[in-house]
Image (cartoon, rainbow, N blue to C red; front, side, top):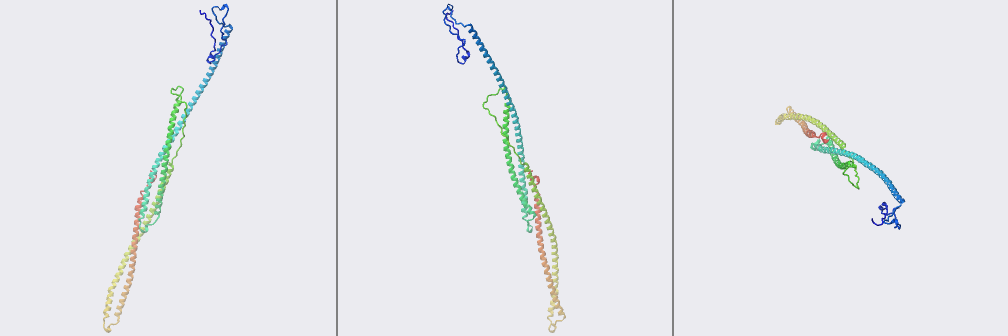
Length: 423
């Protein structure tokens, strides 16, 4: 056995060591002094007193009890905090999941609304395209009545003489030209407006489709978010995440009713004016036929009078010719009797008779010649009337040919209501 003196190890507080502060135990043992008594022979050891021994382990027990209570308090606080945070976290997560669900419903609703507006715009655009086609066809259809009307006006400039008059037909044709030009201008302006609206519709549809695509992606992301749970293996930390926001979409209108009403009004106006022109043509043709008939009747009578007057002239000329022979006979007799000699050359009864006969024949010839000048003058006037009547009849015939056979026949090609409406 070693002869070294056994000295007890000082007791240190382990918590003080952990804190970096070395404290001497309240029950620390002093290094015993060497004893000078006989009882220390061979071993020198430091001894606690019983009081110190009890005090030491009681202190340890007390400290252990304190630490035990403190540990239990901390455990209770930790359990409470864990339960509270766990409940709060689950509640927050559930709220987030609920909000995601509501957001999915909102996005689905707006997607449906966007799709409805897109479909509506598509339908409107197709309708406008059909209206544009109708407007273009209606504009093309107005070229036919315009060509017919201008051709009617040009044809009627070839009327002859007194028939070249600005009558009701002429006035209605001018109104029809002005109306067709106005309708053409209106159709062109309306077509331009429809084209502009189609462009706006397509731009709006493009914006709505972009928004629909954004919402489709947002729905996909939010749906994926809603499927995440605490047991999902593909969740990661993404610090600094930001929420996305959608943009509202606008609406659009269409001009279908306005265009339909405009086409109906212009078609009705054109057809009404066409009817007025046709009626004016018909009335004018009736007037021309009546005038032509009256002229022809008068020409017939004039020709009859010409024939009668020519025969009258022939009778008078024959009567005059018939007087030539008696006049030569009477004059020859007077001449021969003028050759009687001496006292025989007297104015006897035969002489007086012959002289009277010559005077009578001369007076008759004078009267007949004077009378002959009258039927000749009358015949000249009748011939002038005949030529005027024939000329006017030719005018009326020509006018009838222009108005009835050309203009009215050409107007049968006037477009129908459906064609003027763009169908």
